[in-house]
Length: 94
Ligand code: HEC
Image (tube, rainbow, N blue to C red; front, side, top):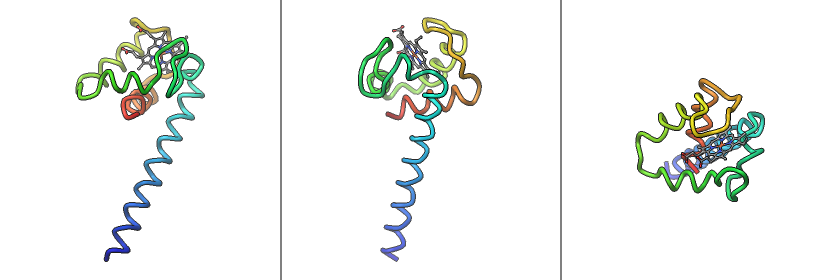
């Protein structure tokens, strides 16, 4: 039983890491990483800083998706729809 629990936890960890990598690849292919990095400030803020800024703000995801999709206060981006949602979720999860 215990071994199964450990296996389940480990599998969940692998899955979470896998989806984070997929999101990072999406960020790269969408051009986000031209102006952003996870840990450091480039032209735009470090995504970890953005996650910190909006921590505990339940409205952040919707607000950011809207701002990015309409290019309000942000340069125009090519990601849209579900991709944009995935990216914003990923940024806020960092
Ligand atoms: C041309 C450069 C550029 C590209 C490409 C870019 N960003 Fe940004 N981003 C910025 C700048 C500059 C800011 C800071 C804007 C500000 O402070 O108002 C920013 C801010 C942000 C913020 C924080 C907004 C806030 O309210 O704190 C998020 C989230 C974000 N970008 C996500 C993305 C995502 C996701 C992509 C890819 C789909 C992306 N950015 C692509 C330049 C860029």
